Length: 297
Image (cartoon, rainbow, N blue to C red; front, side, top):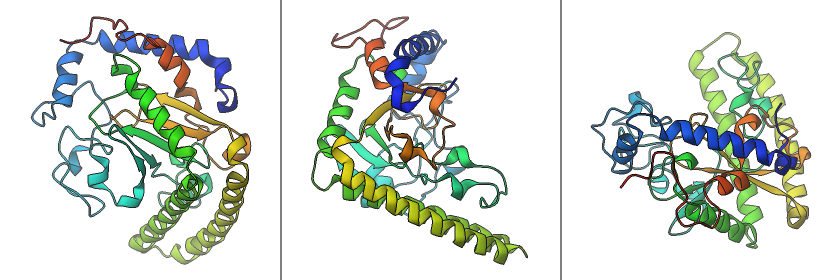
């Protein structure tokens, strides 16, 4: 059964047990400490076999987005994020963390089989709610499962709450969501044109019709969020190793109200562990909670 984001506290015990189980398995994996040390030291000569979500090998040595240095073996798509992306992709920064918008569009309709260039149902690639933000550390940290205490995730949450209470936050968020939607549309159009398929005109016509519906609903969501921001519930969650996508710690920040998830994917709810459960497992206010196998010296 998939937990509802609007009632994540109900699933606290299940999330806590699951995170503890995954954490024990992770720290009992042979050579995991050696591999983590190589990752944190940016060792690009190391052969990573345990850690997941690094930059795909075909992209190593290449520059993507026309921004920043070439990707290295130990990098992830969140490594040195501001250097690899245009400035407007970063909504807020502190010394320790950045707030970014999910690169995926929030609307599953732009990933359906009749729209996706692959003609496959790719709706699981969409965002998890109208607002799907990520808070990522500026330092190289693998996953919630590799943390030794709660200091970093506490800062990440505090950073978001500070940002959320700023006067300009809702406009920055809505703009980032709009930009992600338009990038998805442009990417699909380019893919149709590259395919040079005889069905391209018909597919483009359908895409335009669907995109118009997406824009209308996005405006409605944006206005609703703007008018009800102070009473809108936000939830924080983590995808623990080995169920994560990017091998760099990131905290998902989502709108829990079902109306904001009308066109978003529910495919990842099952693996979204609540902030509270992860915080508790990491020891809460304890400075150094125990780690199975011991924290590396």
